[in-house]
Structure formats: C-alpha cells, structure tokens
Amino acid sequence: MNPAAQPLERRSRSARLIIFRILTVSIGILIGLGVAEAALRLVEKTRLGNRAAPMVSDPLLGNRLVPNTAGHDANGFRNDAIRPRVDIVTLGDSQTWGVNVQSVDSWPRQLERLSGTLVYNMGVGGYGPVQYWALTDKALEFSPQTVVVGLYLGNDVYDAYALVYANDAYADLRAKPAVDEMRIDTIKTKSDFFWNEEKTFHNNYGRSSPSGWSLWLREHSAIGRLLNRDGLWPGATDVDYEIDRAWVRTHSDHGAICEDAQVRTVFTTAYRLTGLNLDEPRIAEGLRITKEVLSRAHQKVTGKGAKFLVLVIPTKESVYAELMQREGRSTGAYQLLVEMENRARNDLLSFCAQKGLVCVDALPNLRSAIARRQQIYPSSTESHPNANGYGILAGVVNNAIK
Image 1: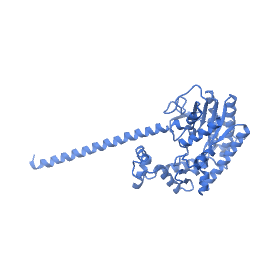
Image 2 (image 1 turned 90 degrees about the vertical axis):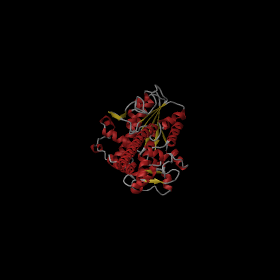
Image 3 (image 1 turned 120 degrees about the vertical axis):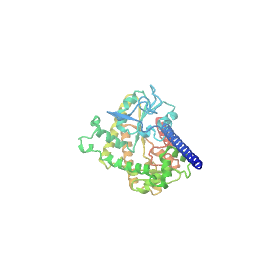
Image 4 (image 1 turned 60 degrees about the horizontal axis):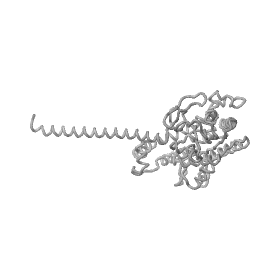
C-alpha cells in the first residue's frame, strides 16, 4: 500500500467507527425512550385504572367488562376482591366507576371510608338506568343494607332510551302504542359528531406545525406528560386546558370556557345537550323509561328489606352555571343545556317524592365547592370529577344514609 494513503485509510476507518458509535448510541437512546414510554403508559393506566378495559357482549347489559382484568374483580367490577356480604352496593356508570382517579378515590371507596362500612362498586362506564335495574338482583346477592344508584344526568337519560329501543329484551319498556320511528336513533349521529370533533381537534393540535410540536409531545407522550407535570419541560403549561381552550375559540358555538384562575375548565355544551334536550322525543322517552326502571329497582330492593337511594349527579355545566352566569358566559347552548337539565332534575325529584324513593341531589354541594373556588373537576373538557369532586359525592351519600 502506498505509504501516503495509509493516513487517509486510518482517518476513513476512524470516521466509520465514530459514525457506528453515534448510530449505536442513538439506537440505544431510542430503545430506552421506547421502553420508558411504554413503562410510563403502564403506570398511568395502573394509577387511574384502565377505562378502556376489554368488554364482551352481554344479552341484557349490552356488554360487560371481562372479569379479572387489571383493577377489576372476578365479577368484572372495580373492586379489589369479592366479599360474600357488604353493607352498601353502588350502581352507576363511569361517574361511579371513577374515571380520572385511582380506585381508592372513586366515590364508592371514599364512601366506604366515611361511613365505616363495606361498599361494593358495580359502576361500569357506558351503563345507564336500564342496566342498573338489570343488575339489581346481582346487587342483592350481597345482602346489602343499602343499594345506591348514581344517576348521571349527562347521558343516563339518553342511555335508557338507546338500550330499550335497541334491545328487544326490554320491549315491554317501550312506549305504548309502539312507534317504529322511535327505533331509529337520531341522537347518536349528532352526539358522535360533536364528540369526534373535539377529540380530533385535541389529538391533532400542534402536530402539523413545528411551533406546536412541543405542545403535542407534552400531551400525547407519557414522557412529555411527566416532564410537563413536574415542571421539567421548558415552558411547562396546563396543556389540556390550552388545547381545549383553543378548540372552543375555533368552535365557539359548541363549547364554553371558565377562565377563572382557581377553577378554570372547558365545557362541551353542544355535545352534552344532545343527551338532555327534552324537546327531542327520544330524550323525553328516555326520561320516562328512567323513572320506570328506578321505580322497579326500588320495589325489588325494598322488597328484600334493603334501602334504596338515588344519587343525582349533575353535569359539570350545571355545577358551574351560577359562576358562568355571573361572568356573562351562560349563553346559547350552555344556557339551553342548563335549562333542560333543570327540567329533567325537577321531574325526577318530583317523581321520586311521589313514589317514596329516597333521592338526593349532589348539585348544591358541588356548586358550593365552586363558589369557594375549589377545583373539583379537571381543567380540560373532561366531564368527570377529580378526587375532591368524588369526595363531595361520597359525603352527600353518607349524610343521606345517616
């Protein structure tokens, strides 16, 4: 080999070695980030519960959670274990299951600590009044002293209509004479449109612009969420709130914002109104069905010598209504939603009084917390309370049982 070429060859080998080392380190970093991301996502899911736990079809319930999935017992409910006997059984949807919090901070678990009793949580996301009635027999197998139904006004009235007119097992609950047109669910199309609009905006915000990549990563990666939450990301902010506020400013007729620094949050008013507009015959029918199945569940429970209690859980929009009105923001769809919810609430409370059902409304207590500037909901469009909000629901039930 030409002696003059040897230094060049050595430099070439050295450059290739450096490149190889850089690639090796880069690949190692990427693999490490991938492992860290996966581990953090698992921690998040474990910490707050897997709200997307697998479900299987059920002829009466529509679907049910697969037993023994993470955080759920052998019956498919969110409990550490199945006890042969309990003092209180709670029925409800995701508001009772406890979205946003660890199982220990759901309102049934907080009720257990407040009351000093054993509580079994049978809340399942997506369920409604008809499922609560269908599960009453299962609840009574625990020989409880009290059965509590967490009735969420945000979508339970619609859910009652939807299941009865989609499942022939509940044909006896349909209006008489039967109207075929009612079997066509026109609500879901509207609801899905508003739901998907907000979720699509949130999921894509910042992705297409280099200036927005930081925001997108802090929202859609577990590592980014951790660094942002701990203030380690430069310019750390409340990312959920920033994105959801941008959505309202883009679709001002579909949402609203409370910008009070202590209790700020974002509302999906158009979406929520689709499930509460009593001028829509299907929603009015859902309210009729809700009252009927509550009455049937009450008769079944009291017939076994147990107490029956209905906890009325309001929407976040109604909880904030007085504050929003004072700030001049309760207009359009927001105002109509609150009016419709008031109609539904008053109808239910009047019905329960007439039929002898014990019914407690959590709205006054939740509104009082907002008046005290206590943050009881996330700052985003999320409609479920945080641990403090669930604590208020537990307190309302505990006082009613006492």
